[in-house]
Image 1: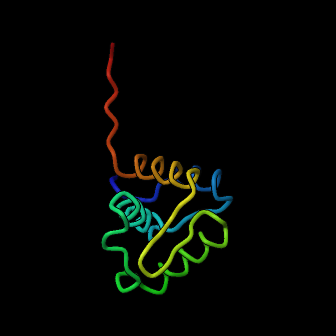
Image 2: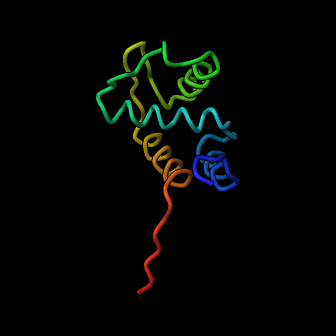
Length: 98
């Protein structure tokens, strides 16, 4: 199901982060992805709740991101990881039979 936290996503999270993620963290990845691709337009603490700020702090402590009230910067490895996670969780794959 689209946007759901699946076993496959958890496996990828454990492999990269050495921990499982929550549904809230999965959804936060969409916001991070949107923000970094759009020059941090719309990035704001006012749009986040306490749990999301804790997730950002954890990602910062794990050295995957640096963030400010008006900007977020991610490592290339974290960027690649969230692209894989978002594709797995939100994109229906077309498999072409040749």
